[in-house]
Image (cartoon, rainbow, N blue to C red):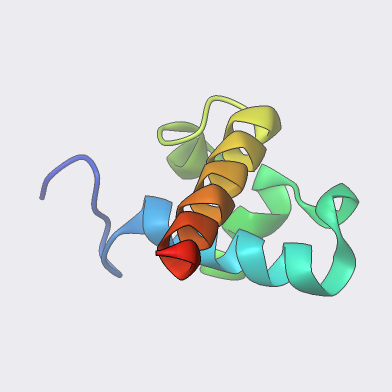
Length: 74
């Protein structure tokens, strides 16, 4: 299995999707890699293979938001 996938599919994308939902409902203070790992049913080290730390994940969420904004403006 490729390193960017796990038994449920694309872990990095599922983590971003779940983090977006947490962000929308509870704000950025509620986002942690350990909590996301629990929600996704994986170990924390599995997420750390994709995101070196919380700030990296938040930066990717921000980039996703800018891409969505750019698409909406086009």
